[in-house]
Length: 488
Image (cartoon, rainbow, N blue to C red):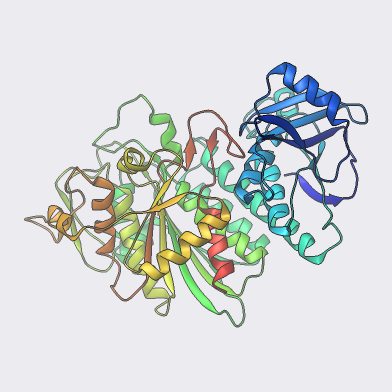
């Protein structure tokens, strides 16, 4: 991962500056860096530059090998942090094979500087683990990001840069986990990797194996994972700083591969189901970041991990399972499996920490979420609108898009079953909301709870944009960390 440093001058062969529009005319926004703007603008105009978001133009420089222009849109006296974050990220994506680059983008506060640092670091990502050595070298991301800033000597700026490095480090981890093929990432290997990293970050990790899960009554996790040769696991990572001011539980869906089970998915697009553990990766990465930042907030992160496979031992449509805590569920659709593993752990997480200030589940839960909100906006459902409001403020500050969705009580009846306490699917119309209502059954009304359905934004199957690469995104991590910061 690229290191970030503050500097007072250009110290690399690549200089990144902004390009905006003022009264329909191009204008270079180069921050503290000095450029021959007239000559460069003539060339940019001749090339048909637009200064739109995600536009990146490279020109030969005089003092540097390259001057790179990244689109900022309309010129502003002060730019929104997310505009700067995305502009820096869009530029950083173009520097594979280069060791360093200097960024000089306009900013008037440390908040804006932090956004530039985050965007540049998040954009400088590639997944190279399974490439040959020559291709790895060609695609190697930046090693050093230099930021020109008038705030470079301030303690606040240095703290912001350190935080950006930590967020990028853990986002890289989450992206790597999502992008790892299921032949190399199983419930057990995920757990073992994270347990080793937990030691590095000074947090505790416990792995509960399939035998213990079965003995202890985790019917949801066992029911989903029993068809696979790779048995399920439950990973529990805990961070408990002295004098913690609040305590949260994060629960992340960890289906390391989802065939749909005996409700087999179509072959087309099934390869993306390696990303069905994005929620589990996000909650583990978030707790590592919170521990690195030494925030005075206690966190329990839970990752129920299973492969949903087809075999003679797989759960059948109409099977009834007993969840942790005693509720029975008729499994009408084995492809509605995420809610089963989450239901088990929502009960267990509240049992382990009875004085939680809030519990949040993070899941690539429903295709209906993508139908409703698209591929860049995730859903938030809740039983506590004050808690939801705090989270949405945190997400906005982090630059992640979430939208509040209801839990209509009239849809709850569609989950009724004649043979069990409830069924795992109900009304098809409003399926995202029905899934949220199912999960609500496993949370006591007095415990503030958020359900984050991140099915769309978690995995980018389209073109890269801003600081978002193709493949694993690392979505929700930054919002969870920001929530821990603002509620400390």
